[in-house]
Image (cartoon, rainbow, N blue to C red; front, top):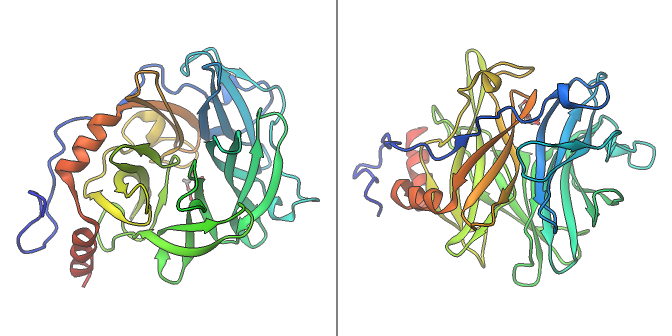
Length: 340
Ligand code: BMA
């Protein structure tokens, strides 16, 4: 039992004495003003480091019809000097892929060494609601689309970079009668998916992550487990508040949660996070790891209007989780008791 676990099982506040995610002074690092063609907004970007050290962001761009597409922006340092593709890099193709009728959103990029390709899991907005689609690429110029791999309503998906016990694994967030929880599914070939398991449950009641959670960037592989940065959506009288929390999962069995933090670690505070098309949203879809092997560069959409950067130490995130986290059953039983 963790030092913070209360003896009577009641929810206890955990002290957050340190800032774990540090906003970059250049924030926001990209907005509609930087775009080479007219758009409404640019936010929720997938991220990866290319072989030559270039940071590539695959940005969700909402056009002036309300339909989103993805456009690549490249920078030598991941902060400024962005070269934005002059036209949409990955636009929906509703004639060939009807599930993309109302656009493509919120990409998560995973480099897959076995395939020597990048996998992009993204939301395809169909008549039936948002679903999860997959595309593969080597260069972010041409793409092989696999189409919808998780039927609506489902989103917030990312592929793991390697097979788990012989199977590819996808994290995603289906809406089910049980609620909006994080699930994992497995596939032998990236096309046919099964063995669906819930891996992290939204809490209930007054919690910051009650009722609706979703994976943010792809899971981060560490020697201690897969680290998840996930969002919780707190509904209150003025709308929804998107904040971020941490959880850690077993390396060889990622559906098993080792630790989950009780408090959120990052929430909307800066002006560009609090005001925009959708107020009070921080929504990362990608990260890169700096050459020091510890600094995470977390790229997040702010207020559905621009892209910002926050930096964190991987070692500090893990240390925080060890001190402030609980084993999954303890958290779930605490949540179960607290919502009665
Ligand atoms: C979520 C997603 C995100 C968006 C967020 C806040 O449901 O659709 O794309 O940033 O809502 O509007």
